[in-house]
Length: 151
Image 1: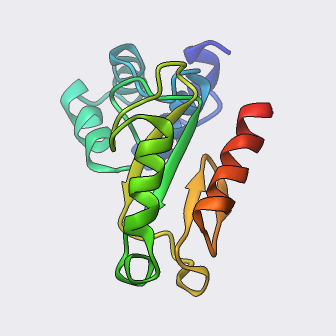
Image 2: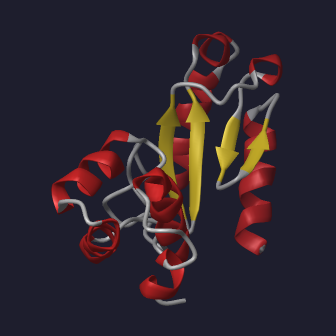
């Protein structure tokens, strides 16, 4: 879908900036906001480019650089950390051969940390794109990643 089609689904009100940015990012196969996305949004909302850029760079759910098709967000909150997210992070880094903020060579996974996913009762937890996973172990993480690779 073209950028113009996406943004015109929303009224040109500043109240819609987050919705527009999410829609533009979701439309990008590399899961990020390009300079053109930000420019088009700024023009549509009649605000400076710098304003839209500052909004996009403030929120961690937006990215200004290309990412993988599957965004892994590992929770690093105190409950998740106490329940083993630190060792899961090391496992993910080793099994994917990337560090936090990097994307696998095949462009399939990007690894990110998040301060809280809000599911402390099933710690440690991670989110891949919009799907939540809890009570994680290295074996469960491995099975989840294998399922993602096959889909």
